[in-house]
Length: 358
Image 1 (tube, rainbow, N blue to C red):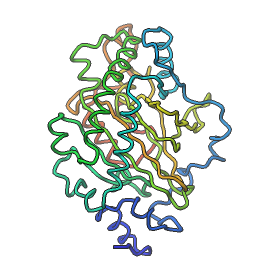
Image 2: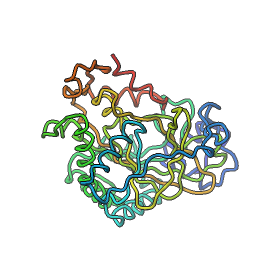
Image 3: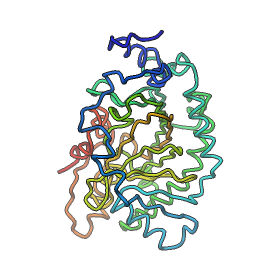
Image 4: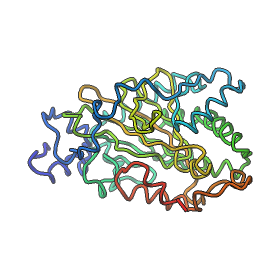
């Protein structure tokens, strides 16, 4: 059923209730953007006003060919402190695994709306599998031009039983092959803080994982909306696979006020620090605002793995970080409360971290 463009409820029904997503809107060949997606001026991504094109700075690209070289560890920790974002090449996750998960992402979003919507909030057989659109529909004044499939990993058995057949094998393989990289990254970052990772610490740092398949379809008037609004992740670390289209921007530069494009590098993975690690490192490692531009000519996909504490974990600055007498900047918070706070509102930059500030 084609929505009546004059009717907001018609679009809501078509996009959300009927499971067509913004992909369905995009494929109708709309000439203008529905008003629900028009962002306020200050949230739009303008290359002129953000100095995006003029910035010669870019997030560090780190070659992981030789893990044991102390310069590699130094580069990772330095990037985590100064940028909160970096790209890894020769990271050990096979390129064919990355290519297959990208193909699987396209395969899932090419499914008929009826098939995809079996995984919607209302119809999914599990809270751990969720097909949706935008970010937090109840809280947003303007919607984001993105569809997603979100998969919370509990066990391989549950994933095999409940994740969509179109993509589950490839996603599981991607997660498995990324685990060694994630552990080594965390070991490197913790070593700088004089923290030894035992079983309890491993659970706290990476006790739960969520993987999203994101789809950003071609957009009429991309300059009026966003693919994803300004935010920092609530994870410990995020491992992002992006395709070759581009559109990810990070707030950085010497002034920390310039939106800098993260150019796609074939075979690379983008790593960013999340709020949970900023809290646990007492601000030593930084989670950074980032956003995604809409695209007027190409469909874009990305596949982030969110490496998180467990929902039941209490997070706060680690005792080893405070051992020298450093004053805690953050209080102890229940991780599930922190995540609920994040999803209760629209994307709004880095304001979530205030929830944990003393």
